[in-house]
Length: 128
Image (cartoon, rainbow, N blue to C red; front, side, top):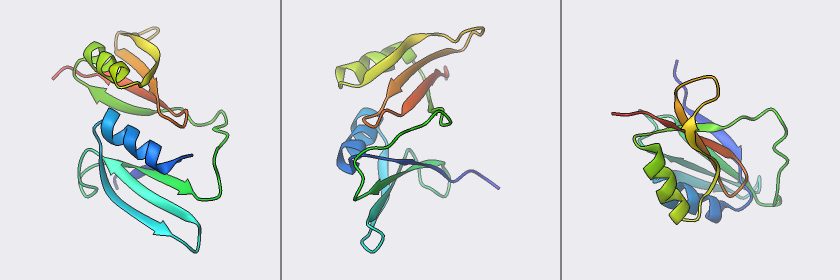
């Protein structure tokens, strides 16, 4: 068994695709409209789905916003230099909601950013 993808619902597909492509450097791996169901699925990630876990962006054509509730936590991405990454993301207009620094009660250096839909993305420094 292996993890294939995580799915999040997005308000505006084009805006979300632009964020995940431009700000985070992911590729659109596949995208398909389902006219009968009035939704579009777009899969984004850093590598081919056969080898990598990806994110499924679901856009329901008749919805423009969602209540995230309090159950969903965040998506996590590993980065080499968290301070440089956060500066680059800020220069692209990305909202940093927790500046880089050690996690509470730990030593791992983390930061949080927010996508256009309000989903939190944790950045975890992983020196190569």
